[in-house]
Image 1 (cartoon, rainbow, N blue to C red):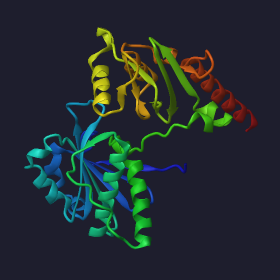
Image 2: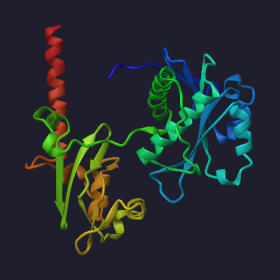
Image 3: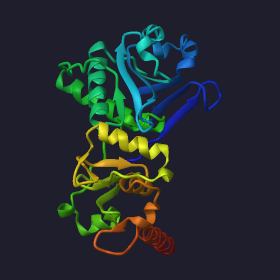
Image 4: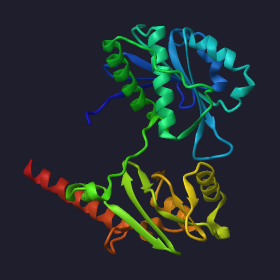
Length: 309
């Protein structure tokens, strides 16, 4: 992927204040502020333009997912001021306002962006959407659609940098029969067999993804911790874990975790060192040994390149 240069301006001179973020050579900008800093946005001309906005906050029921509302307006600040009085927005803690530096975003454009962002967040399943409706994508000329899709792609790059990770697409593991030898060196399939469970997973980008069909022990031990218990309960509630053989669930879809250990803990119902529990499929090589080998290869390649130069 081509690199990007992101510029973040701390408007208040602190990391907790209003931030304005841009990607070099992109016409858009994202203004980020806490809900408590709404007053500070009042005199910012950029947030009084036509734009799209995101309201987000922590979910009290699921620590792994935020609650999100996405909207659009001809004057974003005035819309936010109205939301401040709305009891349905109690979850709201942070705001991201997406506008254009060249003021070329029209009402039709932001409606298109709003619709597509709702689709993206819904498909990613990383947040709970509170929008009561999912507006259809409005018709636009073909050239405008191409421009808006490019604009949206930059938004998807920038928002996670600013802490809004729910626009990141769900990782798509390579199916084992489609993985080439080269791909296996980068993202091999890992397997774990413990306390009657059988699970397979792949590491994709910065997430450890447990694959559909993997089994989970229902029983837990007291030391597992409340966070993992809540994660298991949420997976059952979402239908991502369903009954399998007696005493076990199984995954109905691929599910990402923050680390091999988090995945292992949810699967076996107790705290486990996932770097040791998970092994490269068909071998006795642990995740830790595999990762150490990747570091060694990278170091050797760097040394070789330095010697050539």
